Length: 397
Image (tube, rainbow, N blue to C red; front, side, top):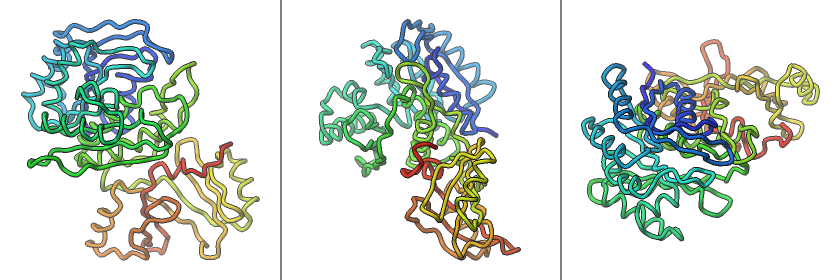
């Protein structure tokens, strides 16, 4: 059964953030999205023109309606609407112990518009006590902790203070920090204090398609938690989803445009165990002739490596490589795994022999090689954004 994700958040008429971004994200990750809309906004890529909060009783009626019939596997909370709604929701969630809850403490839109007043921000205290994870950016971290976040040491002190007081995990998003890399940090309690901080760091993605990044990340984490990924695993998978959605976004609107959740296809396994067929490599005798042929078929060339290798992307998101090399005399099928090492450990226990155990390759993929009973070459691998969006992706792809 598809994971059932309840999204408690505001509506974005421009479709870039809020409920609209949440539904697209959960859908692309194989979940069933349900909603309790807390506010209606009139907004586009340039800003928020108007906000109308939904009465608390109506918000809670939405929550109760889906809970008593469809059921809930995880909750994502975004724009909350009012202090009264925050308090009522916290009380209801306290009655559902063990349910994964991800809270994105939305205070300001990407355009700069305020989406929560002081009373509502103060009420976030109650929500943070019943959540699995809260995901503030740096300005939100400062507002929640009341402490400086001017440098790394101050950010650590602020985050550790919040985790110590609330006893709940905190993912501090680093997108507002300066620099060519974006670093997100997970702070967790371990029962005896603070667990070691886990960091993820990637090259900053240039562009204005940043509307809804926080909404998308938190919804993706909730969806992955509902599939029983651990918290660090869920965050890592959600970050990959966000990055691919940013890289594949078009130019919509004149301001901070929406991401492309709908384009994240065949990039993130829905299951830990079942591999996904999304790539193949076929031999080529002469690279230029094969490149011309596959471009004529309508495939988009995204990689070229001298006279030896090229990669193409299809409309549905699958990729195809051609390779001129003596050892490659037959096609290779690539099956991407949600957890390559776990999959290989299981297969080895079943007596499956590997030509190559899992290892990290210089092109950013982690691969294991084996053959089927007929001798066909199979590659089990993990690549994330490196399959379609490596740093050497052709600029005119």
